[in-house]
Length: 352
Image 1 (cartoon, rainbow, N blue to C red):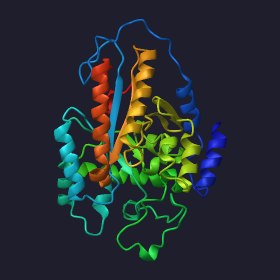
Image 2 (cartoon, helix red, strand yellow; image 1 turned 180 degrees about the vertical axis):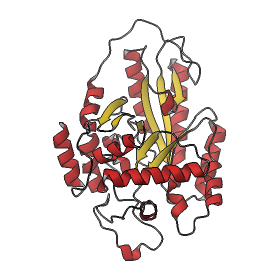
Image 3 (cartoon, one colour; image 1 turned 180 degrees about the horizontal axis):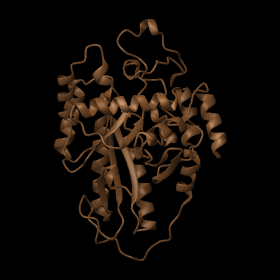
């Protein structure tokens, strides 16, 4: 799909308020290039590669990125305890922690307590990135007027009922590039002030990262975006909601094996790391394993080239859905050991 068509569709879907769309290479078009690229099979053996984390060998491997979306809603003990249990059971699995500054702007926020709760589940091997949803208090604290529509669900927010906070379901594309830059800066400043050395990776709330979002990211020094969604894995859970159509317009050609690709904007370029295995709220353990099987086949076709898959979960629903991740990892480990499939659990820093 050409850029002009993509921008027209996305801007129309988001009520025409995608400032800064122009000048960006369309993510769908770039994903199509990444999807279509094929490599010749190699005769070299993959036997020298390890089946778990280890030093990189000449052989390729299935690189698995496990991410956590921090929604900015709540920090309940049950979910944090579920994450701690996961860390104890899988100490060799680093997590890409997409942190959200919105926790610090709730009416009853206690900064020290919030920081302590977040830090309690982080590990030294983790990567700290940024996650933003359209929370009213975060945006207003960043000097940006809040927009109550559109929403992922096709509704409008009643501001009279927004006494605590609201806006989680407002897509970031409802804001201009300049406004988004202000929120990105404010979020990074807030998190870093609390001791979280957030780097240069990002995922948009609801995977909604049209041109204006990508433009803001590159302008603020973000180098990796992980918003490209594998929509077929999400469609059943989100059926009938406007967000499904928007995601298809943005990421319609992303599949379970789409590899990282470059997106160029007027401010520079970034690496798009597809969330090709989705998040555990939307897929079963069996579906995640099926994605792994597709990557195993891809590796078999070209044993010298890494293949990257991404799975993850939300902090706010870890107690309920993290067991799906654990079950998927257990089965992936079993298959990797039985079939000598080289597997490495990595962060975005290790992805080429």
